[in-house]
Image: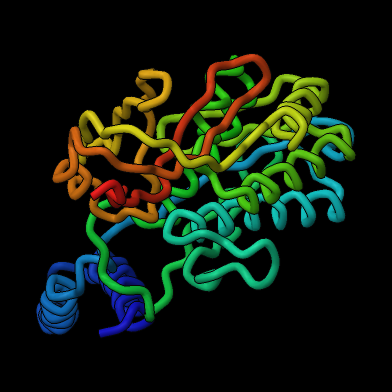
Length: 308
């Protein structure tokens, strides 16, 4: 059974349930016929793959400001541009969660990380966007890549509204192209003098005025976010595989740094096999404003002793 067949069965079940409610109790034969078909459909639905039973992720994106006329409408040019830029940001962040992105070119797995506009938002003007689930998507356990991308999008935007340390925590390890896509979304808002609110699951990130949008855009600028790759020599003191966090003591300064293990190392626990051994690691150092640096471990190399 594919997803289209599953959706058709759901629709047919609803129609039969409505029909059954309208058939008088004394029309026994008609009721038996409808009830028989309902039982057959229920059996087919019960055997459907688990991914069909999972509710798709939904995010509510609403707007206020110059392009929005209360709850009546929104200028089409702005609405289309804002939704496109938001979808691009989510798709780019989703792609960056599984691999490092090229500076240009198509976004990997774009088809699998699309959003559908399903309805307009109530009580304001905006849209409800829903995760697209194609027949080709594999069965998944836990959160999908798109769900993780929506969470990360909110985390990044919330970080721009907090302190330098908050922003550094949220952007550390984020692909530069993903940050660029998010800046493009904020730039669209700022240029049109609009603000937005993004509600996903039980969390809402909201901009109060256009000035706040512009400040967030400035804080995400490359001038404010300083990233540098560097090699450090020393010893790994320990790694927590579940949280993917590490501690490392530098040989030269004896300084202990803490950070996250990057996605280029799928199994963080393998690093525990070289704890307290002399080694070399490549880290991405991220600084925001005057906040303290954040570290993401990108690569590890053994140090060959050439003294013997």
